[in-house]
Length: 322
Image (cartoon, rainbow, N blue to C red):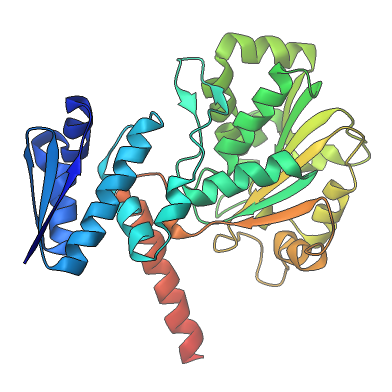
């Protein structure tokens, strides 16, 4: 049996690491089968040497995250454990705690995982970025945050958000109202993200000025989009023709971000996904980046990550059976 210690400079850090009713530290104890307890300004870990070393590494990662202003939750703890177990703790430690922008309620928006950090850097450095991964990885939310930041810094004059209005088991014709009323439900996630970043009044004001546009993908045809930050959401539901049409809308001093989840394609089986085809065609072009998320980048409820992993394993079994 080995015992090692970690010094903690503030009691607030100690409380954050242990969590309410020791819920955070219990996750570490269960993962590595070690005993963890505090004494004065030290955290002491006791158990088998390799397990103690891993637990100490995870605690160190949590201290680093606290130092960057991160709120520690069971999700943070599990992510730190997964990175330490894969030998990628240094990547998590080097993750910038830089704030992209602040929501209208004062909440700082920043990447929470290494995958999200790489995605943000890709968008900053490239003209066109593809963000591909499962639900809950922040693909759209972080892209909207970067768009709002660029707009407020006067780097672009417009924010344009679009997505294909693909019917996932329901028919547009049965929805009430005119065409805009029919497509609004498809665009609701984009509205929600903008409301969160800007507040409803600023959003409405900029919509009326034409500085913000939220529209179905079909509305993009025939346009050239200069001085704009353009986001195509749910791109897995574009056809190859639609994707080509969208990409060729790119104008001067503009950025494009294309997001999608290739495991949730709602197109008819006979149609190819424009997102999958585009990543194959454009993968070696300078100025175009393709960022892929994994289930470890899911920042929603812990069960979402487990659901994504379970479906991936099921799909893998089906492929093997075939």
